[in-house]
Length: 110
Length: 162
Image 1 (cartoon, each protein chain N blue to C red):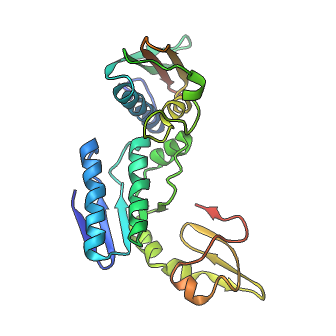
Image 2 (cartoon, each protein chain N blue to C red):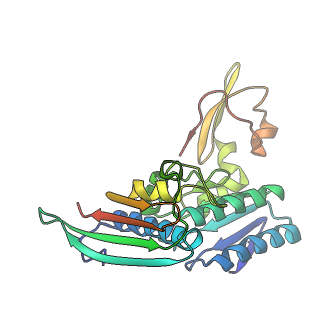
């Protein structure tokens, strides 16, 4: 899917790595969830891939804290959420304590 | 995952996507092999690895820490360019694990040969380069004995790590 949308090898690697981080988060912190992938096209014709990770877990109380490099509520490195944000072009995080988490990331071809 | 011992080095070649259980087993196997063989180096080949995320990165730094407890050094070889770029942007430092371009250079690093080859002594300071770092050391700290055994402390000037 990433190849079809014209993403370079480096961009594919970044997207899959970001997806790996977010999937792990949904599993470990969110108690499991869903991932939805789609090929998208920008207004000026660029291809891209959009992935949404959604879980019904406890949600993120302090989003700024969660997005800080090195901060982890588990035993990881604390780089997953902030790192995923750096690796993609668009990053949308919606979460509230007690109502699950949704992360939508998009990577565009150059 | 097979661990092969050649000389004083343990070779680990990561071929497959590592599941959580195999990561734990790999760390245990490396620790067991280090204890049983007294190997001085662990060379991890990640040529076949397309994705390194923070989980894998943590596994690699943990193997580095485990090895150090057994007085062994860990070298990562064969990192793909796309992986290197992604790791840098991810902010993963892989501290405690050295890197080399391929297995041959990785072995040079572990044996300290490259360090021994490139040292220049001046009146007060010695300049040394290994495969992955170089810098200035005061002559008292950079004796031929410590250079040969790769036992140099932190250099005086800012070390550049490649």
